[in-house]
Amino acid sequence: MSTATTTPRICYAEHMPGTVAQDAHVPVLIVGGGACGLTAALMLHDAGVDCAVLERDATPLGSSALSSGFIPAPGAQAQRTAGIDDDSPERFAADISAKAKGRAAPHLVQAYAQAIGPALDALQERHGLQWQVLDGFLYPGHSVRRMHATPEKTGVGLMGRLANAVTAADIPLITEATVRELWVNAQRRVIGVGYVRPDGTLEHLACNALILACNGFGGNPAMVRELLPEMRDALFAGHTGNDGSAIAWGRELGARLADLGGYQGHGSWAIPQGALISWALMMEGGIQVNALGERFHDETQGYSEASVHVLAQPGGVAWNVFDAPILALARSFPDFVDAEAAGAVKHCESVQALAAVISCDESKLIATLASTTSASGQNDDNRRVFARPLQAPFCAVKVTGALFHTQGGLDIDAQCRVLMQTGQPFPNLLAAGGAARGVSGDAVWGYLSGNGLLSAVAGGYIAAHTAADLTRQKV
Image (tube, rainbow, N blue to C red; front, side, top):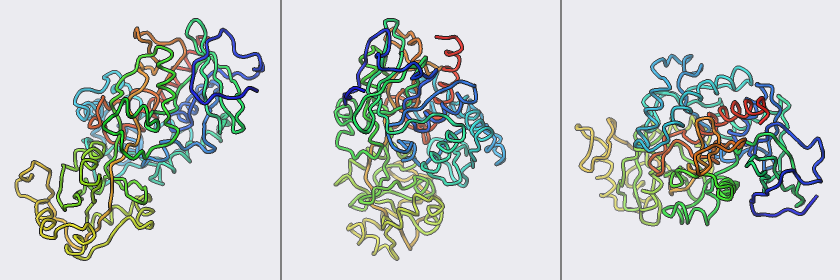
């Protein structure tokens, strides 16, 4: 074995290195063991195509485990079981496009909206994943209840179930394997990869088709400064594996990149606990105020763009303020329960106590709370108001804006084939999830709740079917 390089690179050759044994080959190789990669592996297994997954961590978690684990899907069995029969892929696609103001890739919007329901059903029927539709509230931009979750209602729970399904299917999952090399021949066909093991050695594995399900670039400060300058100083709350390898490989290969200005931020990252506070609290009447006790944006527009609004406040911080009925809803989310146990939630018996926690002027805070209700349905600043005023006792959580994961990357077609600069697809290179462009357009406000896991699961589902077809064609 050779000593590894730490820089992602492309290696051009007609054959893999001579050290590769004849059996070090798999028809389809998947780089990345997050929700995208594991979904793709399970779908390939169902199609009767051998595959293997290379995952850099000791346990497959990635960005998916750091999310809430909620996946939007129209027409899935769980949605029908819940009695929700007024949804459709067309309605979902319209919601995605509306949130992105028409700037999301239409071919991917349609493909993912069509694929995500069948993908969830396949994971349920063939691999035992249990889905439930979140009830009682709508996430920003969704016109119907379609957010699916596993019983744990966490990203960790989702990943645990996917990993268990991969183990049950006896799919090779090679952990602690960081891919650093893509081997490509003169026909621009990927023939294999080189990956680093914990002891620093470099191993190689050949393949007939490659799916990049690896990462975005939010954990690469240089790329963030270059491509997302508005978030250059933001806290990165995503997975460290988001090092931009897919972008680096794509640039060297001459692949087309798209929507690099798109990303998912979050305006509700509890500090100093480092915990995600569900935006469902804002949708049910909670508000955000700054250190002066002033409300500064319309929280119902979405948590992604809220990150920018929060970071623009004094000290780059805000306070989530809500009351007892919203607290009861919050406690139905395990992540919130953990954050509360860690001390993120301050309980205040009065406005005076709330003002003391925030260290703001009491009269200013009283005026802010009074402005959250209005007979006209909006206040003087055109921010949404709520039918029920917030009432003591109050809760407050100190938060900042954070960068979670990027939404731009390798340009792909509706079959998840990576595109060259000419617009033609590479012969056998596929990408989905964080490695590829998503369906959020090219700006922070284009992110519809759940778009990340939508791209991961629907993209993994589609990429698997495309890769299965390629292997049958012996491409």
